[in-house]
Image 1 (tube, rainbow, N blue to C red):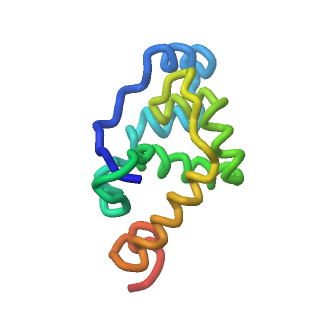
Image 2 (cartoon, one colour):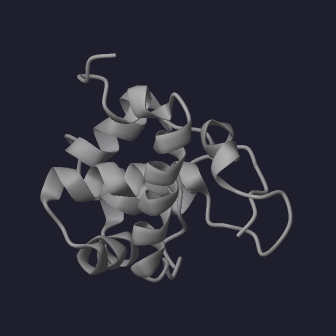
Length: 133
């Protein structure tokens, strides 16, 4: 997988319209996106991916899915299903309503890249800010 860093897309109009109609007071995932923006960028994960090869899924999205997964205590398979069928997740991830999502094994692969990178760089501070140095 290679990283083709792209700007974070805006929330699709159809998703925004439906999400605000369904959640007029918002919900935690919509509020995360509305308050914090996309939170992560692809550039923050550039060192995890080679520059050549099959394009990787947007790392900013995978990082956010990983956070949402932890918030809800979901397995990888359940988190991948949530990307496909939860409106608020699609909103936070800037995905079209018809986006098919990804295979659940992508999450394990992404976390493995994070852990491997943390072993060799200062990223461990980002992953575990509570640790002592």
